[in-house]
Length: 232
Image (cartoon, rainbow, N blue to C red):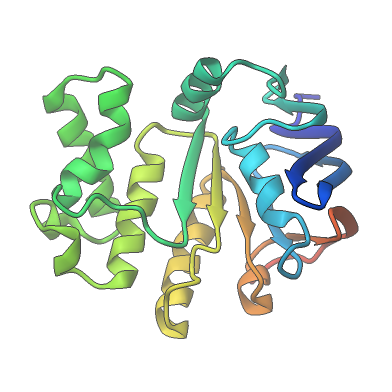
């Protein structure tokens, strides 16, 4: 059997506050296999965003182990984590995080700049992915010239540019209306059908219904882990 894409054991994260140490995550165990479509849910302060930051190698745990594609990355140095993020993971955030003075093409290509890919190759890949998300005619536009839903499509194209095996999406529809949210989730559904593992954080039950597995956090712990079948 191949190793899970994600496996965490006893994962914990604590922060120092004026009132003392606060445990945001308390000894979490979880495995995610290749090709899974997982929604992480829970109320504000439940630990789901902390968990996502650890999965994305944006932060390091206070305790426990995190195996990403079989490699324990829990305590790698920051430069090694940055390299790992650029090669393995794709990120989609609620706020899009597009650079306002760069064209959509250059926004999508940005991770390839850090990877040392030549300009012609990265622009060709960016145009290909913009076409993939339905924005092939907007390559030279600036982010403020398109809608929020279109900006999130650009963010998804950027997440795909390094051909990641895993996409992490943190409230990807949080700034969108219901119709546009369904369009964006349809794109995630399609990517998952193509074999990409997707882990998304959401507080919206209708968004979580797209996933085939739902994990719920409360007070820094997993309180339920259910297979749901996802949307037909």
